[in-house]
Length: 180
Image (tube, rainbow, N blue to C red; front, side, top):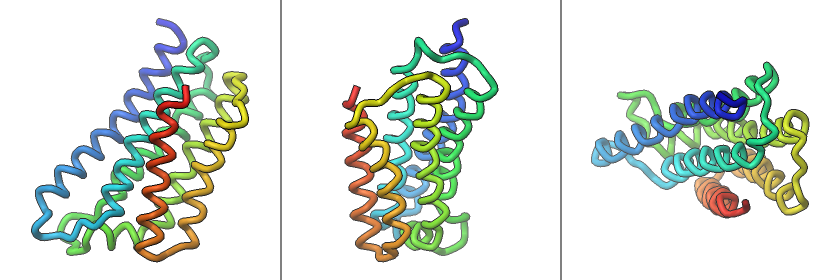
């Protein structure tokens, strides 16, 4: 087993949990659609987790020749993946709370948005420091935008701003899927 195969197995486990949580969340949204207001923020947040996970897979593949199994690499994997697992669970209110999904997001947005900032920060750190990978200027701007959109949303509490910001984040993540 190569170092990359070992590390990607760890990523697969963690990102698989996040993706599974999102799918279960979507199923719960559909099942409870008549009892609970869904809104736009929760589905957009779920899509951001899915697109973020896909971007993580692609980003990891790009550096597959440089990856070495070290304790720092494992810490980086946790920093990149665990926020997606957290958000995938935190995006839905506890069962029986009677709070709609969008209302729950708006109440929890600060914690969720901070969590969304962590993966791109750890990704850049890991690629530069651990994998000795150098980004070009466009890639640098893409990673900065992945952090700045959630930062901006911290200061824009309105429902409309949150929806627009999450749409923008998803568009950025979709573009990121085609950057390699």
